[in-house]
Image 1: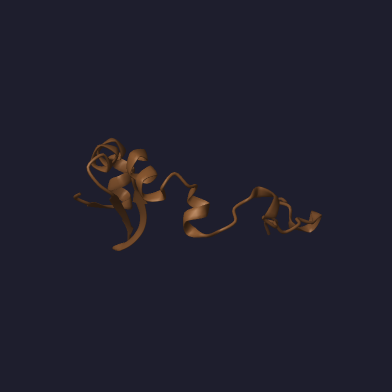
Image 2 (image 1 turned 90 degrees about the vertical axis):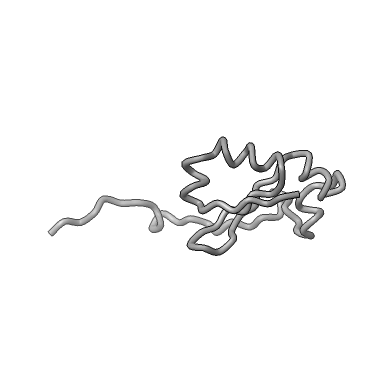
Length: 84
């Protein structure tokens, strides 16, 4: 299984090529030279996950009901800029 590395800029410009490459192995997408994301074919994802969800695989509880979001007050809303 061969892996391919693409910069984020190249990935954005050549999405189709990244999807074709993912059929042969993982595509590592870099940001400023550091690996940031991995694109896998769905079949490879299913093999790696053993049929479990990604949340189970990485051990995180991603249930939407358990994500706490900060409350936004009226003072946090956008307001017009003051130009002097």
